[in-house]
Length: 104
Image (cartoon, rainbow, N blue to C red; front, top):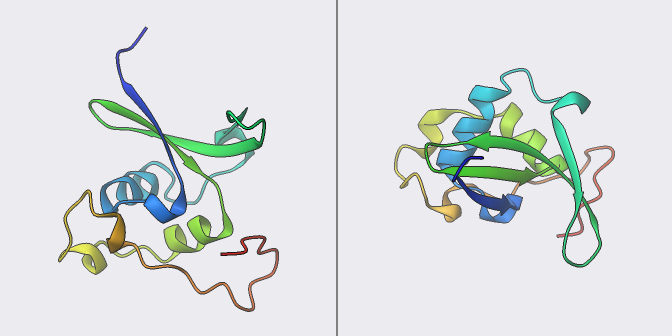
């Protein structure tokens, strides 16, 4: 068994480091085979994709915003931010996107 710290990450807390790992691991996007489903402490069904660093296993919650951010990823957009800065990832405008279920 590994001794990795386990962290569940929502889009709002996504950092440039984790976003970069996601894009590297899933360069063409993720599919159903990559999705991990589980129930959180409130009994809600969560779907996430997994990425791992040297010491942490991240489960990143799936959302339309995550998919759009990964599709439009450009490493240069984050060069002025620290790798662990969750404020570096801007909120995504989902207006006009079909299938958006985020009510943020």
